[in-house]
Length: 315
Image: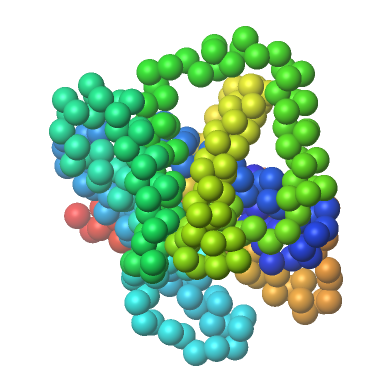
């Protein structure tokens, strides 16, 4: 869904069926992805923790360079290095955000982190909602980072609850009907350009059309819908070994799909091919399968963490 959402970005007209689908996907695709990231994040007090943090930053720098060079080449523009490290390219905001969230877990004392799960989750929602009042976007797309914190914290604490067991009491037809109704509402009514609200990545002052109060209410509604849709998807998507395999290479899929999409979009433009909704879906599936298949090769992992690899070889 993350790849599909990014494939659709900038290609769908406002008021169209495709824009409704796009908005529906953007309600939950990153919240669910971040929830899963929180689920697999652990608090460790050892050198391995900081080693993994450095690996994430290494991956971030590598793909910042790749995306910067690609965009400069495709757009025939000079390379701009101003705030290169502090201004993530496109989807790369997730990597420094993940570093921030995991460092936050490390900083919070164990007794508070483990004994006050509800309070910390509520505080994360207050931070996520309150962060929209920051009138400017600071380094590392801080609005995205703060707004997405609740999903990471919910994911981190989700190990305490057997979510699938609880969701098993919800009839599958209820989940299907709920998702279908929400999709239809997006297609028929919520089919305008609401990107600023859906991504929760901007200040409430950034889009004056809805006003500060309207943007804040919009974020709260997006929170509620993202949680509901994610739960319904968990109900209808079976837990399988194949899905687990795809999940094990999510980082490779995430960091490699933006440069691939830039190249594909460039080719589509050269050959004057309009990227429709069906074609976008096919492209996203092909990219995902391709990245899953090549993830087994050593050179892919070397590209993700080249310094770590060569350092281990030399030492």
